[in-house]
Image 1 (cartoon, rainbow, N blue to C red):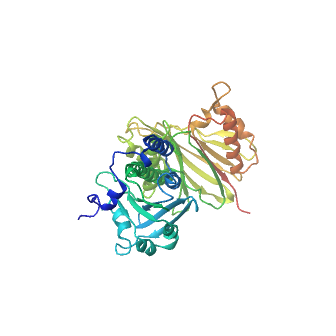
Image 2: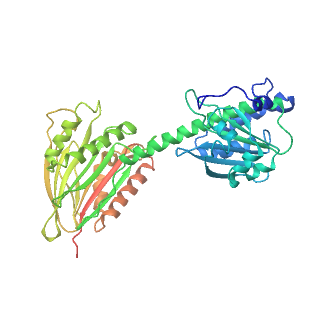
Image 3: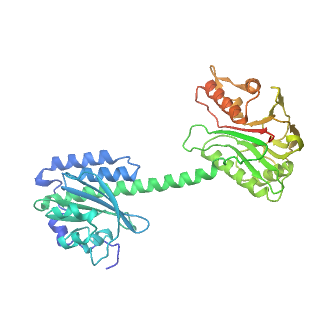
Length: 438
């Protein structure tokens, strides 16, 4: 018989009455319906497999059995199990899958060859002690295969033990209905966890990088995506240390927020990561990025600053920056003066003949360049009033003498206070400070 195909009903199935019209033990349909209703209500919406599995075995006792074990195969062929009984309560573990010879009923249920089969005392004794020892104290033990989705193997089995007597014929249908609800829950939570793991893995590729440690430079950044279904947004920044010792940096903003904007910001970062291998001139890089994005962004567009940072004699830094429609960088001088660095340019990803400007600025010791997205200046507070560029410059001027990390912390705190912690847009800030080594 092919593996994975349910076999015709065995004697064990007949003994347990699976498929019988009754819905409860002892001919009490109301009790059975109430039990199934409680099971459905408590399992609905489960998203975490471990807690759902613990609840499943707890629900089975004592209505269906005196001891219940949920057994689920993992991706490596091992068996994860969760057990509950009136005497040992909750326990879980993992075992290797036993051979067909040592555990014929258990493996038949796992493969879906039998819907229900009884485990003999010899088979129970052959199973790992931590898993099977409580079952040795039960007069009858059954392995119930969980119903599978079309074309799929069963998601697992329930092992049910009864201390005294056997299951009545009338209990079979209740057991089958419980197994069906368990199967749906196991499959749903497993799929949810797979989706969640995939989402986390994808999000990790979209999150900004850890800032590099550069001699003579202090770096600090803020990245705060707006509230949404994913913990990433349309704002981005990146830094790349180049073979000649200079550092390429970028900060930008995709219009909109949420998953669609995050996907485009990830595409921009990956494009720049590839383009900087063949070009390090910020103005040329911005033009190449514009060409790469044409036709693939739909109605979306981006603003960005792309710059190249080089160390100069006396601990100075030279920043050569190009901009595509992005807010002008700000310079905080050591004496507390704030300068606006005009870098004109058109939006990125809209038209093939877009023009981008460039500017070069020198940072003396302890001078700082602050790049930011419009989520800062467009933060709303005080009855929907914009925070604005003037307040940002005043905030920055008040940071005289502070290192980069304290400056970004103060900006973040000021914006969160202004907006009441409910910023509507993504926020990103990158601070670059000259810090000559002693």
